[in-house]
Image (tube, rainbow, N blue to C red; front, side, top):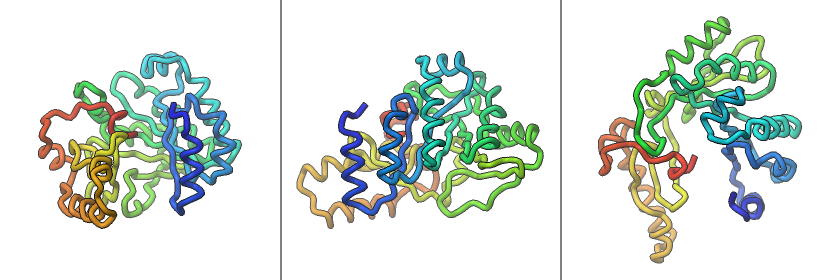
Length: 254
């Protein structure tokens, strides 16, 4: 949707040594993949909550599953490391868990099952398929799954099977079991720094820059925010000025 997206990525790839990872819903991505490969994009996170066309239409409100699957095929063809992110939603796509897992059986991809969070624009959030329930469903279908030691900072607990080309992962985003090793910072599309998905923003980087802050002042602001970050997502949520977690994930940035 951003018209100068490729120009933006070219400049980052040319002028920095950063590893660039992209998260996409895959509907407009397929034509860009050959150039993304040339730019050396480190990996793609492809959001895909179901392989059933009717359920996909119901969840996303658009009949674009064929476009997303084309994106997946192009990523495989060009050898770009790929993670599939599935948000497990009670009553909507839990029947797809095993079928989604088979993507990692047949392809060198990581399929990651994410606990549903309340970032849906309404705050409506009742029953959660937690990480234990997801793992139980997976082990029913694939009994030999074994856990892979988690690296520091990883959000997903990964699993392998001898019959799989790729891996499975479970991200306990609502249970928040990985907070103790979290090393993530997030800057929203409007410049707000969040040290946790569940806080409501620490300060606005864009506003500080436009007000003339020096690099040293920006660094001090970041270090201060990191030093005072909540110990986990529950504490971050409790400290919110706006009590209810309900903003859309699109406003947070992924």
